[in-house]
Amino acid sequence: MRTLYPEIRTNHEYSLDVGEGHTLYFEESGNPNGIPVLFVHGGPGGGTAPTHRRFFNPDRYRIILFDQRGCGRSTPHASLAHNTTADLIADMEKIRQQLSIERWLLFGGSWGSTLSLAYAQAHPDTVCGLILRGIFLCRPNDIAWFYQSGASAIFPDYWQDYLAPIPEPERNDLLTAYYRRLTSDNELYRMAAAKAWSVWEGRCSTLDPNPDIVEHFSDPHFALAMARIEAHYFINGAFLEPNQLLDNCHRIETIPTTIVQGRYDMVCPAEQAHALYQKLPESELHIVRDAGHSAFEPGIIDNLITATDNFARDRA
Image (cartoon, rainbow, N blue to C red; front, side, top):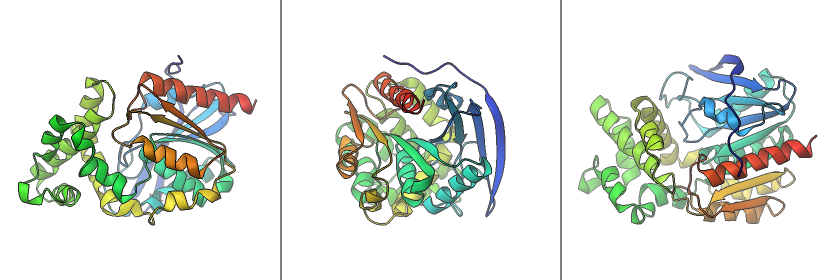
């Protein structure tokens, strides 16, 4: 079973003013002459970490990580202003142009799969491949499954902590109730809601309990950006047209695509990956029998690194 590549340092770190008050952090590592790959992180609002460089052979890949608007090392922190899917797609294009990249591989999981698909459908000529994990199509039922009713039946104990900040009369629409608190002027309300929202996701992300992931999701700085930006996107339907990602699959049907999905993913159930696969019949679908949602479960790591190694081998 394949494991992550060894830790590596960055070659360059950048700060890019994309306008409207936002400045993005992005970085390069690996081989400057290698295959350009953009790591598209989840959330939205999750940010990147040095571990994310390790899904790629540094001798073969020019590895690019960036923090999307409002999270990670991008500023302003947890900002919702001028923060939409179209803005993020435009930011990705600015990074590509800044680095003089003609075509790149997109590697994204969860919300990162959403944004990778949306970008590829908008700019298919700039994408040489897609490696996607934990597919999130952002349809109303996909959002409701995790934040209103669905995963609650699998994790009823964790669900009680998710419900705790919301009074009983408001629980028929938890997304709206959370959004109200996460955008409140009351700092105590904001932080209590952010922690409950984020910890719920962290607890449900792995097949086996992982205290390190839960601790990361409970960090106040991380939780505030994650919860505020996710709620902002989800209450606005991810700023996508209904069924947009599936309906526009014809635009990317010639792009080599590998889909990696945990069988027991409770955040983004496998139905979404299968629906995407049916729209992209030339793609590869790998359902990992002993994994949930997280990219850092052994079976998921094995499949993702196999995918990046195979992509590099095929372009040798």
